[in-house]
Length: 230
Image (cartoon, rainbow, N blue to C red; front, top):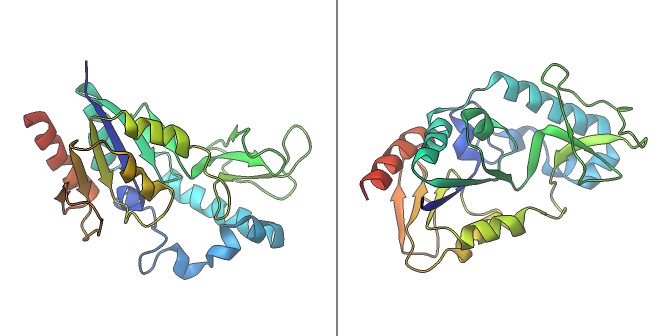
């Protein structure tokens, strides 16, 4: 029986693939106000701006490739039951070969409608844009399948269940400041190994974390050695 390895990933996971982070200097929040492009109110006020914003992100994603960190996590499936929980909206984990991925904040390559946020429609890489007037089969305007600020995070319950049943918990590239994702740390079993990979110092209330102060690719490489030699 393989040990269950649950990995929570954030923006730092995909930074080496050229995906802009929101909070760092020069990140997307320097160019756009969160209220304008990542809230239901922003979409209601200016849907074209919001659609264009995510169309741009989709084009960037299609040019990006999984980095060695993504690939390393996928390769760990040979030795562990790996479950990825990601705050990222890109599909780089899947493209690297990971087969079990929970997206907490939605998926950039999917759409939903303003009428039904739960039914999704795949967006083709050949036609990666959503425009005003693009509608679902019931006549409702399509929007990005993204969990915006102020909206419920429906996948948090499945994520909690994965963490509760894990043997090893790993955090990569997230500041643990964004809830409810940051709260997943509370569901790790006492005494179980916890690893945190980030080139920056991450403050946390727990003192039982093994820190690997490296970027995603080098950090996953070191993590792999530690896990396989444990």
